Image (cartoon, one colour):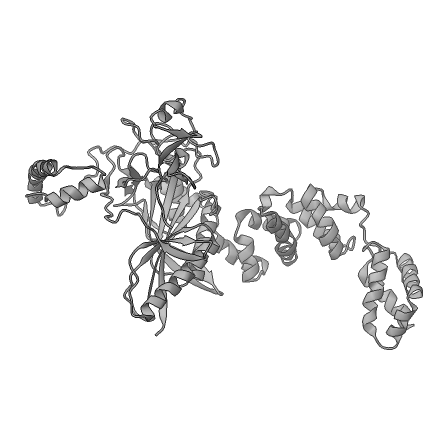
Length: 477
Length: 97
């Protein structure tokens, strides 16, 4: 019997507001423990939470970007549970009437696109951070993260493979980064993902027993955790058993999942509307204003790049993943009107350096005018593409110097003087009589050796086309 | 009866409260009276009435996104029985595996 996995994802997106959701404490990452706390986020008696307008603004941006229906009136609710990372013993979240419902995210897997529908988007506050002692029976609580705004995005169970799950996450991450509402860093926890996974016989429309997966801190973890869980549940079903409905944690060390022990078995969050917070009303004007401000989103930009610049779907897909890189590409094309050449250079050279240093384009000293100038220098024969890639670009990238200056200062100008090159070619031929023999006896491939020798004498600067031409002429003659 | 003793015990358990049997009995009786009183609201036909989430009808007050550090963090931390490097020490919370 063939089985098919059914996956729904719950993604928590940490909003990039300066202050927390209900108080004016800073949200800066990496501050000393408990240095960004106040009576409100630590749940002291008698305090009142006041909603951060920017957090609502960000939530509306995402809602509109994914085509969700904004609830003009939404309700903040208390979700009750006891855990040391939650000082009030309830988390302010949303239950009935979340900020938005519905919407969808379009993903692309193996060249075909698919729409993943969303159930809801709701706003809530983050909990604190717990550090567990390895040796002593203690845990340590840091409340700096307590109260930072989160958006929870719940997908419908319409994802059917680990690859689709990763594509969904990457697309969502790209969208929140385009909107500038979250930095999307999974390792630092600003984008977190839980998954509901079940397996059912292929073609069946009912859902199997679902398992909730937690503790996946990168796209790789998500992919591996889901693959393992699908295999585990399928094996159980084949043995005639049923998976247990439970929460399981992913363990990267063994790349397996384990049941999470010690959790309250009798789950009952006793949600009710938070009496400290009045109904959240969003005006039509506000929604319209945000709609007008929405940037071009990755999928629209990709389609435009393919149409406007004649790029392949693959090239456009990589260029639009990060907005700064897409902007860099377009700014360069504005100065140097050969989009294919620009895309090529970015996808090979530029990305090689960015990946090596694990940074994004705006953290470098590269400028669109530098790349345009570099490619022009290749076009007008001042330097070869090899010199451009191997000698000029690294300098431009590392030091932020204009390519022209690098070429001049390091004397990298291509040698195109026929007189000089002819002299060098003659030298090389004279110095290697046995190779000349080989060539003349029919081994035409030896030509490459001669070209290499001339390059060596010129420090790689000889115009390769010209050298080829002269050598052929001399050797044939 | 509005609430059973088992429900009272379950709520006490969720709220991490220890209730001696006798106290649980008392609360069951008292809570039942309150709940029975509120149950009379069920007689009202609310089919076409929007739920009231809050008695006030004005807009939610919102603040601008500005950072204002709280000055007396030490006073908050002074409530903790024990600190380690400014973190609050609690009994180990075991999260498997």
